[in-house]
Each structure stands twice: as structure tokens, then as C-alpha cells.
Amino acid sequence: MSEEKRNILDTINSPDDLKKVPEDDLIQLCKELREKIIDECSEHPGHFGAGLGVVELTVALHYVFNAPYDNIVWDVGHQAYPHKILTGRRDNFSTNRQYKGLSGFPKRSESKYDAFGTGHSSTSISAALGMAVAAKMNGEEDRQSVAIIGDGAMTGGLAFEGLNNAGINNANLLVILNDNNMAIDPNVGGINEYLLDITTSKTYNKLKDDIWHILGRINKISPGARNFIQKIDNSIKSLMLRQSNLFEALGFRYFGPVDGHDVNHLIKVLRDLKDIKGPKLLHCITVKGKGFKQAEIDQTTWHAPGKFNKETGEIIKESKPNTPPKFQDVFGHTILELAHRNPKIVGITPAMPSGCSLNIMMKEMPDRCFDVGIAEQHAVTFSAGLAAQGHVPFCNIYSSFMQRAFDQVIHDVALQKLNVVFCLDRGGLVGADGATHHGAFDLASFRCIPNMTIASPLNEEELRNMMYTAQLPDRGPFSIRYPRGCGTMVEWRTPFKELTIGKGRCLIEGDDIAIISIGAIGNEALKAIQKTTGRSVAFYDMRFLKPLDEELLHGIFHKFKKIITLEDGTIVGGLGSAVVEFMADHGYSAKIVRLGIPDHFVEHGSQQQLYHECGYDCESILQTICSI
Image 1 (cartoon, helix red, strand yellow):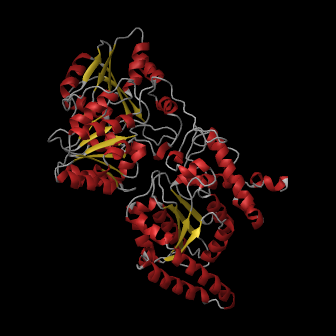
Image 2 (tube, rainbow, N blue to C red):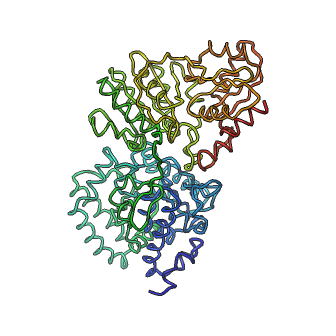
Image 3 (cartoon, rainbow, N blue to C red):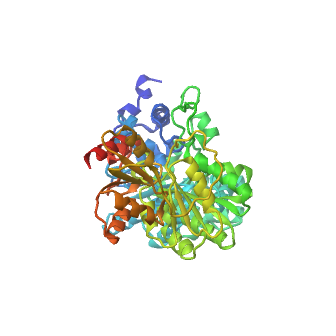
């Protein structure tokens, strides 16, 4: 093969350039694109397996459709790396997920080719439907709207709401189901089993292919043959699968399944579908991690493996000896320990068993753990049902994903005073995943809910004790939020202690300034205090945002006229707001500086970079101490 053909990717700066590539060279282009992703992700970690699985599909989409005029919506953005590389971001792709660099997800402000921002799953169908209806209203009959949704995202309720509405709108919408039987962990639930039934029926697929091939020739003679083919296909499905097609029952025309790694065949299929009006669904079978052996075999680990040796497939671990554990692992080991003591404890996660470490309990007690799919609303109400019958559900949901289930927390849990323990992982700034994944709002949003206890641990021992306290009788709705990453204690397996709900503690006495903190971000303040000279600074760990330790606050306001509040959450409505409200309600007067996430969406970078940008890393806190 010529040198020119080996560098096709270097000539592509836009989809227009891609369209100039001969179809015979597209297989080579896919190889180069896949190698580019492997090269970059081995040195600059990101989401790996999902992008490898849609290389051919991405090339085919941009070869057939006319982005950005045609809207292409990726769900979720994990699979958009090939899209980014083909749409003018090849040369700076090494900045992906880096501070001030490219976002790891599609982002409208980053590129005109990113039709819709997708960091959370299951949104694409609703968004693309809105775009399709807008095109219809604007008289843009030739404008296409395409939603590419993973089968993991299809487990989310919003996807079905979009499908249901699209079926009656008759808008020009194409939904491409990227079916690889994986989200981050293997998919679960009825929709997964249904898709497996369709894709594994060898009799149906062979007969369908044979008839499609024969009647495809007729279509060249008679334009009406395509409709006839579809009617034949529907009959085959009903006969061979012994069930009606779910998507067709919702008003979609279903096509597939097709090989998602045959780029030339995909182009033919997409060209045909482009001419068919109305809502339609193309079912593509792909392999997550395609083209990298280790990623194909262990798809969960290689979803986002970190740095790795691209030649050997060895994941490069950067952990040092005597490193404290991740908070999520402390949760995983502690819930198993508590479950041995309390037979009523059960664990629930919406498709994140490895991400939150509930998989530790799943391995030993699979009958007491439930992965409910990407379905946060269901996870909360399912937990409420368990609690209503006397069980103690630990519902572990990432803070940013809990936003999707706010009504269920209020209506189904808090209103009924049910003892559901919400373990909100990734509370605060999470780092490279950026604005869509920062756990900025849980403290403020949960604080306004009656009957809710809100706790946040300073370290691993505190997390264990809060989990122990939350599962004791008659605790009601109980939220424990903790950050992404490691804590501070190497020896963290301490005996359980019941905490008094609503009671904080003074860890460092002082005379000039008081720092009032909640959560693990308080460790930044402790480091700052150690570096402080010339001022006597007290440190208070509140432990609980709700109920507030008012006795402790009375003592603080009687003693101090200079107070700093610190939280790894939005500054609007959180701990700082609660302290200011307490001061106003009780007639105190003090100079208060509130440190936390400012009232705007914070972009991506390392956690320490973002703490500094927001003004509450160790050095920034030290500056605040000196200037207050």
C-alpha cells in the first residue's frame, strides 16, 4: 500500500474532506482512525472502548450525511472520539480532557459539528426529535436528524419517552442503536434480553438477508419494491421471533441488525435510509473496544483504563505504596461489612457497579444487590419500595446523575420518611469529565428537602461511621456524599461508631479566624492552617449540613468576627448560605467569606487545577486566611 494511502487521516480536516476519499480506501481510513485513538488514549487517558467500537459507523455517517447542516447527536459522548477527530480536532486531540483543552464529550460551544451536548445518557432521541420537528417547521425537508444511542443508554426511561413521542410526530428522524451489550458494565434488564433475541436469531437474520438481497435487485426496476421488502421483513420478524417488534409498535420502521464494522455496507444502508421519510431505527451490532484485543476481552476495565502500553496492553498503575484507598472502595468494603451484620441491607446502583464499587458486595451477595440499568429515577423509587417493606437500601448514585431523580427523592422517599440511604459518589469537582459530571448541586438541592439528613465525611473513618449510623433504626432519608478519588487514611478499617446526627466538631482551636467546613475538602483547609503564620485559625468540621449543629454555630459566632466557610459544592444554597442564614436569623454580625464552586459551570481539568481555579485549594485558602 502506498504511503499516501497510509496517511489518509492526515488529509481530513472536515467531513467535506472525508467525502473526497474513495470508498475503496475507507477501510484503511478506519484503521488509521482506530490507531489514532489508541495512540492518544494510551498517553492521554480518556474513554477508550466506546470510541473504538464506532469507528466504522462514524466514518459512514459523515460520508453519507451533511454535517453540520444535518444534525448528528451522540449518546453518550463516550463514543464521540472518532467524530471529534474527523471534524477538525485531529491535531489538538491530545488535549482531550486536559485543562483548557478539548472536552471529553460533544460540546456545542467547541464545534459546529457537535449538534448537542451529551454527557449524560439517554438524551439523544428527544434532542434529535426536537431538531427534526424544527427542520420540518422551518421547511427544511432535506435536513436529517440522527441520534446514535448505545444499548446501555437505551435502558434509560428518557430514551423511551423520546421513542414514544417520535412515533406519532412522523418527523424525519433516524435513530441508530449501537448495540454492543455494554454500558460501562454489562447491560441488564428486559430491553437487553429483547435485543439479544433479535440479534441472535440466526434463522431470522439469514432469511432476512436472502430476501433483502433478492428484492434489492427488484428495487432498481420498481421503486415500490422497498415498501414490499419492509412488509416482508416485518412478517419474518413476527414469524421467527414469535413477538412483535418493539420499535415498530412505537411507530418506527426497524432495519437491521447490521454489522456495525462493515463500513462499506453501512454506507449503502445509510444512503437508503436517508431517502426514507419518517421515524426509523437502524440496529447496528458492534464490539466495544474493537481493534484492541484487551479492550475487546475486558470491556469494563477498558472503558476508561488510564494510561497503558499500547504494544503490550499493560495498564500503567501510578499508585504509590501506602496510598489511602479511594472513597468508592471504602464504600464497597463497608457496605459488605454492614450487610453481614444487618440482613436488611441491600445495594442499588444505576449501571455503575464497578464505578461505585458495589461490585464488591455483588460478588459475595448477588441476591442482595441490584443493578437497575441507566435509570436513576427508577433506582430511587425502587429503593423506596424496598424501604417501605422494611429493608435498608443503600442507593449509590453519582452526585451529578442524582439530579435526574430529584422528584423521586422528594415524592417517593422524603415525603414518606423512608429510610433510604443515598450514597452520592463523585460529590464536588470530579476533574477531567468536566461540567456535565461535577457533583456541584447535591448539597444545595437536598438541603431544601424536609426530613432529609445530609452528611459528608472528612475522611474514610467518617464515611464508615456515617454509613453505620444511617442504617440504624428509624433514620429516615439519609444522604452521604463523598468525592472522587482517594482519602487521607491508610489504616482506615476502624471500628464502627454511631455519630450523633446534626453534631459537628472542632478539630483545631483558634482565636482569630474560624473555618467552617463540610466534607473531604476540609483537608485542603487543614493543610492551609499548618502553613499559616501570624494568625490563630480554628477549624470546624460540621459533618452534617442538615440538621445543622446550631449549638456549635452559636459558639463560633460568639467568639469570632471573621469566618470562612468551605464546601466542594455550589456556593449558592449550600453550607455558606446556611451559615449566613443562621447569622441573620439569630442577629449575629461577622465578616464571612464563602468558598465553594462559583455560580457558573466549571470546565474540565484535574481536581487540583479546578480547586485552584475556584479558589479553594490549599494555597487559595491560605491567601483567604491572610486577606480576610
